[in-house]
Length: 322
Image (tube, rainbow, N blue to C red; front, side, top):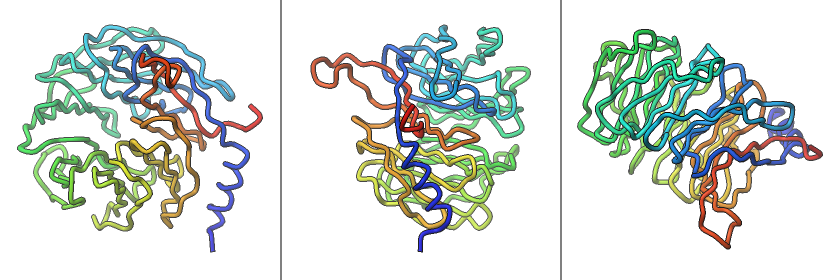
């Protein structure tokens, strides 16, 4: 028997399964993220800029383009509770904190290497940034000074705090999830999660689960308290690159080089919906309050005629008649 939630969401997506795309960049988009209040979505691109859109009814309206980085903006994230601040990580060996009210860069923090991943602690006090040399630097969000730096002896892929802010998680090239105490950064546990490279990690908003995606094309769901794998989602054929839990923690979107985004019901693992894409998907992010999914793909202009890249942000879950 399908759950009541399953039936409700099926019904909802039947009437709201339209995707729209919005021009954002001149090259591919690496990262999309929503502000905590869900009013804005930010995107970071290979074109060295970040863009911010405001969500108006059924469309995204471009508010600003943020320039200043000297290299690709690989990842970005918003302050967990302040909807005006976001931070970008770039290959130019800096991170930048931006304020949408002034559209200015509040701070540029120099780091030791080319940055590829970034996250903001749930308490808003610390920004963690990881670089290509597997160094993670912890930066005080107020003083913009480095508080700690760790060099890991393994390939660090994605980093995240747990929702309680007392543990720090890393996914690595050996298929493991490394868990450190925070702020002490002492190893608590290393979990053999996947037989191959463990790419991405996300915590659900309720704090009950976290999910990891791997090059083995599996997405695994973990119980935060027990640190055991509860179930696996295996509908992707290619490495799971990006994950996002819905605002209620009941849906999990995962994407890869497959030409679809899988939307699963967390508690049963069943497929709720499939969002069709024309190309590989780099990044997915559920809206913090409603079933709207922002995502970005490896777009090519005119699909076949030219190979010129374009960078669009896409939105799924819009009313069919919009």
